[in-house]
Amino acid sequence: MPGFDPTAYLYTVATTPNVLEDARESHGAVPAPTRWAWLLVGLVSGAAAAVLILGMGAPSSSPASEPPAARAGPTVGGIADVIEGFPDGLVATTRSDGQSLEVLTWPLRGESYQRTIPVGVSHPPDAVAFDVAGRRIATVLPLPGEELGVLYSGIPENANIVATDVTGYAWHDSTASALAYTTYADNELLLWVVGPVLSEPELVTRAVGIEGGVRAWGDWGYAVQDKVNDRVVLFTENGELKDSHPGRVLDSHDSGWLAIEDTELRLLSAGGGVRGLDDPGGGRDVLAANLSSNGESLALLNKDRLVVVSLEDGSQLLESEGRAGVPQLTWSSDGRFVLYPDAVRGIWVVDTRSDEVEAILTTRIFTGLGIAPLSNS
Image (cartoon, rainbow, N blue to C red; front, side, top):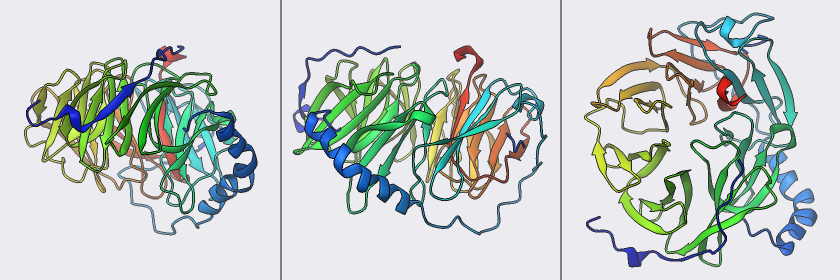
């Protein structure tokens, strides 16, 4: 790509191969012995306590934004009984008491239920991300006085520490239970992948000259955000340096296209091509973005609205008001519904077919949101 100097990013490819397995209210660090010794001794009395301290800020008392439609929800019934036409189960993390998290599961048919998970919550909370199957969570919790964080991941009720000194992470955009993360040590950025067995991470590559973290990955490779140079650095699936482009990673699709924000919104191909989106009407100050599973639409979340853009011609398909909470949103598996947490309580549900908007689970504070497609059950 013109203007890109590969020598600006010196790297060494690891020889280790990449082998991966695999309610409404009812309403790395390197996994060396010295690292885990630190976890056993220091984390119990230090990091765990710090996580709880971070979460002790009182929840906001600001009034919730008035939703276009907000119902308390049934005492029984699945999400499909409340949101007509919704095709998936809903999974989410909620802040129960300001110090701990609970995972809420709302099946397509049947009552919602929740379980406490062994992960604290920072204040303000970092988003909790679900994998594509909606079965595993990941989040990075900061430590007082430290620039880097602690990565927790796993089945919600058994989530545990995966690595420390973490600069970023990303779930695979099409494979369940596959997680990539980056750590920083001795002026080197290290890129790791891990499957269902969280204690067995594999080193993909290491690099110097990049200060940032992985933001997206798939069968097409890895996208690492270089914060210092404000660039997206692309690696192949084998960890070889491939390309670089100005901008910020927003999301990826298993087709190999990435949504990025530069001077304007663009689609960046893992193969090197770039395509601009014609005045999508919402590309400024994007908090989060998500490409629909069918690859036809891009949802963009700003502070006080959601914008959905056609990827075919860049035209704006809809715009919906609703204050955003944690910077996160997700599509239903059929590409019809977009969901995101409200700034205070509840979840906004936008039907892109009818343009209807309503709020669900309006008594809860959400820190993470995902879907559980029936195809993955």
